Image (tube, rainbow over all chains, first blue to last red; front, top):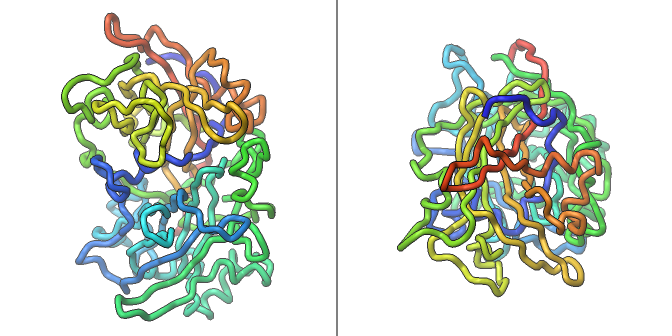
Length: 205
Length: 234
């Protein structure tokens, strides 16, 4: 397979389609094929406050979308990322029991929610408020979308976050997850609105 | 830690967020412009991946779901390289694929197309690129299938690809098509891509990858965003 590559422009994006579960979330979707990534980032030993991130993805008519997939990427409890290219020599080594990455489909629960089991991230050394990056894929999504989830109980850090501050004030609430204490632990609610008055802010990352 | 600053997503290469001919985009594509983002550490890093968790047959879709025989259809070898815009190989990255069977039916319960399932074919596989960015799968050529987008609509033969790349910023999900498919000129998903970039989604027939007596070969190279390395105090 030697030889010159055929081109050098970016390969165009295409939709993940309605059947992505076969390749990307097979086990969670009830198929007899292993999943490389589930909806949890944590193990028993992982440090940090256990939380669930729960939300729905709503289309322009407010209908919950049942064939979206969300990917989550975040820092550990100390604000460190377990980077693919990171060096193990780094004295600021991230929590080795924490993957930082998870996938969840919306077609699994009856109310079409995605549910992540993770920990609340610390603030990273880049000076940004604690946040979680979400990538959103779906049938009808020709490109995946990037957004950020911030935490409602981090008002001070949110107030000085450079990314959040650059978002028009009236749209900032679309990026802030609300904390709920439930019998099963802490839940942050984060609905994603594709269109409409509450259209979520998506970033050109 | 060393991270890269990535070149921007090239919107001359990617489809728009709403392409009305592809009906599902109308209520699902955002209507407001994407906001520019000065990336933080999170966008410039990405998940580590341990190749030891792959199963031995993950790259061979003709065998990884076999129950009592071989899947029906035309066997193919599908290989290529994952590169960045600087033409540097992207090594050690995860490539995941999924597809319909030879009859044009997915093993997914939502797919109700009246074409047979194949008990020996699931239609998903995965692999990790080597030091030169190469990946290689063996699979079955997928069939075309009808869909409800418009009257008498058919998807061209295609295989779905997901590539993690080195960082969140380089994530890519796409579809690979086959050369000479007459349905390409009629497919709103393919046609949503700007004309000058469409051919990048079409695999090339490859005698080099063809295995004598076994399977025709197709080559599909994937180019992710490139960037400049900048040591930073993260």
